[in-house]
Image 1 (cartoon, rainbow over the protein chains, first blue to last red):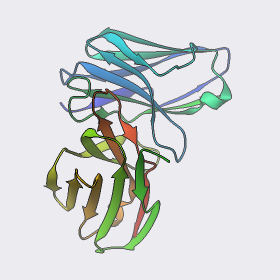
Image 2: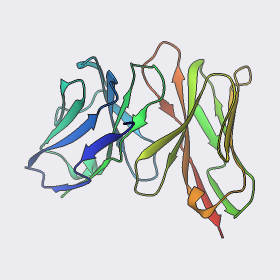
Image 3: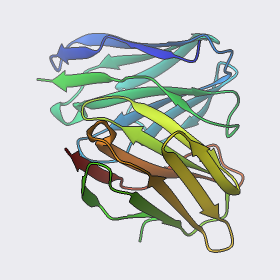
Amino acid sequence: DTEVTQTPKHLVMGMTNKKSLKCEQHMGHRAMYWYKQKAKKPPELMFVYSYEKLSINESVPSRFSPECPNSSLLNLHLHALQPEDSALYLCASSPVIAGGTQYFGPGTRLTVL
Amino acid sequence: KNEVEQSPQNLTAQEEEFITINCSYSVGISALHWLQQHPGGGIVSLFMLSSGKKKHGRLIATINIQEKHSSLHITASHPRDSAVYICAVTPHNTDKLIFGTGTRLQVFP
């Protein structure tokens, strides 16, 4: 299984809502990543987890809260988002940090109204 | 100036044409990646290179570490190859990917 899955595929939320994005991989990878991608731009790194511990936070606003409950699962909790947070949110995993190919999920397209 | 530059930004081709996309970078790297993203979709990793050349089907990727340059070639292009191709590098001593701005390829029948 070389797949990274993400749910939901699409999400529409209001600025006062709380929602979560989910990412899962069963490749035994110990590094997992959240990226944000705006239209026609390359992905921007948000967070990196290594062995279930937060390794990198790229100065992301606290309205985005990552969580890694186990080695296969990565969540991104969303609260009080702004319309400019609308984007494609991509999850990726790799065997270890900076260790090889990153496998990307299909993304969650988020719209904040 | 971006640390990873790609050219061209946009590319239009007829089916069966040979296509080349170029990537230049300005930092020391441990690896270079070529990624493919279809419209509205997730990203697929095509190649990871640290030296030489790799081939997968109709795709060939080369890297010249001394010149800090890589190329992605597509032989006998097909409309299903239409996508954005992104070059990304892993600099030394870092956990991050630095992405190029992508090359938007359209192949017409």
